Image (spheres, rainbow, N blue to C red):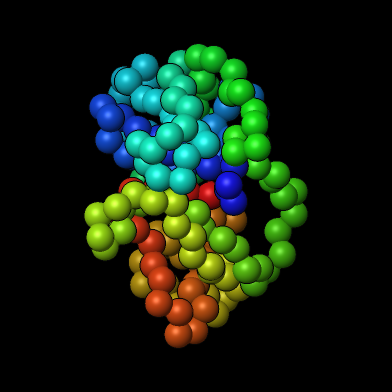
Length: 173
């Protein structure tokens, strides 16, 4: 299993986002992935390469969204699970970097719905940066401001790459 840190987040049995295991009872995701107000109706699937495939299901106890979350700014949340995660070869916490290198090649991993309507775990390679060239290429002022204030990154696909983001990618590590 290539991505043992991956979490599929569901609400009312539907995929609403992705996340990453960061501790035995915590999943890191985006606040936009957990927009519904009823914390206890969320569940997290771990250890599966397809949404609703074989894996472990955990109930969410509480969702902690960044207190300044509005729209896409401060778009981060922690899911506190009711039970501790049982680690195995296919379920492990992600290693979080403590520094950022500009123009770093990064990997987006997501259960997001693809063009065939399936929800298999997929990956896409991007370059993450905060440089002026990338910021200037953005068309929305809010997107530019989020990067300038160091609340996010500008991400680009490699030249000529035929890849993209998929529906339900919110929170994807």
